[in-house]
Length: 266
Image (cartoon, rainbow, N blue to C red; front, side, top):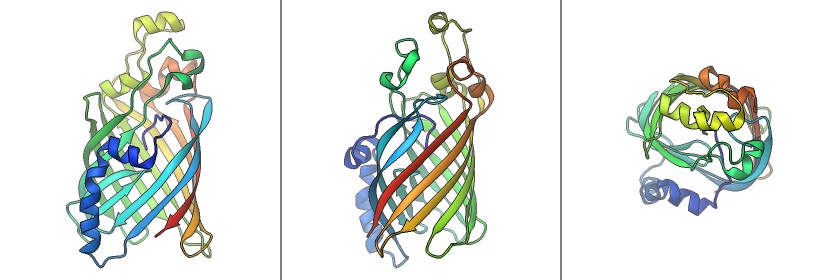
């Protein structure tokens, strides 16, 4: 998930607006053409997250939840975006990556409203590579670019599926994200005019480290087909992002978010 958010639309509108809806017919064909176990899940929940990327204030918002996983072929979720596996190896996977990046709305900016610009949501597309070290641990990365030309993003991650506790399933993920200069400026830069309105120095960050997170995910089944999915994320802004006056004067380098969704598995 990107470091910035906005109120989320309904699931059909979300899929259509990201262009991911175009992959659903292909997904159906894959389902009919594979004997591998397939995950299909949908639900609704609520998320508590920073008001904007770097904010010290927070807000709640409803979230749709969808997860389609066809082993060695496709992963599509409202949490992690789209992965189309073009390699399909036993341990190595890679191919097309896409995600929907939330922006920031004026209503979420608080004292910064009318003094810095709101940001529209964007679609990012690129590629990913993932290595499954064993049945419980995988490492990987994705590189994507804003389809409207506003920056590039690199993410590296490692995920560990922890031993189950009874029926409870849980995992840990450690990730690091970097941005190029246009992306960094979009979220954390301050123009001279904005600096005058905020009474801070102008800030034009360069490319580099931007965000690191430690995430804990938990699934608690309530029946054969239902359960609760929860996530706790501790994030820390790095480099020029964390040093931006938007963060040091009006926000916080520490970014916490939590989510809880009721999920139905088909």
